[in-house]
Image (tube, rainbow, N blue to C red):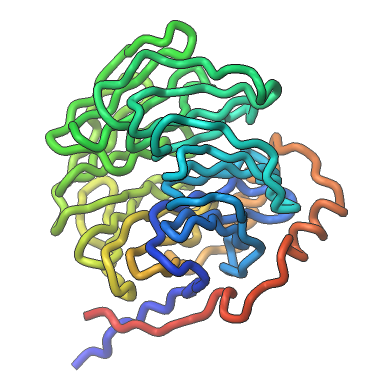
Length: 350
């Protein structure tokens, strides 16, 4: 009998309630980082490669539904059930600004140039905040048809996308005019929408389906049926030849982008998987679950040439960060609690 292949994820403890959102920063001069949102009201920042806990952003008074980092991983943002979206200093952990809303904030996203924050939620309104004038009133985009579930920027911040919790489809909005320019139709509500790193594809998860859309012409490129209801999907960012999906059956599945064939299936979580994301270099991916843990999975061996390519690409066009910034981020902005570093756990594929 063949010996079962063993998946060995890094297991990141620390959250006391379900993990509902994950976001990787691009590669920066001091590495890349992973931020997580949880119903425990405390977003956490980690080293994206090792899973080591860097710090906790403390200040929300309700479940945190969404989180993100800006291009240089110097600022973080979070959206919460306490009716606020907050901006944080990702080095010190300090709260820089709190944007009041009239209902739960379910989604937030920094613009690529880091000057704006996009939010959406139960109010059915998309808001764009100018981070250079945080006290100014936000710009409100046309009212969405339902409660907002996901938001993202694309086309060099000229377009925004959103999906709703109570109806299918993804709507694309022209930032300049504030009007809908296109709708991508799905049968079920879109629970995850990701713009690929190269800007070519929009990856969506709705019900039992993962779809890939042309981000420039908006046509449907691929559509694959999944073995269970999936809540999140992510496309490998470097070559785009595979994607991951996770959902209610607690398994993490890897698929071939071109054929839809299942390449790998890993189990480790003890509750439904709410979010999956590839790291910026594609060498690993992270999953967040109802069980309150984050697991970081390796996608396979990477050649030296691959590593050099990722590093070179990651450093291109990034802002300079001082040595003091690097050392402060490594030190963390809180004393790390015991058990909040990544730990390896062996889990056999069934």
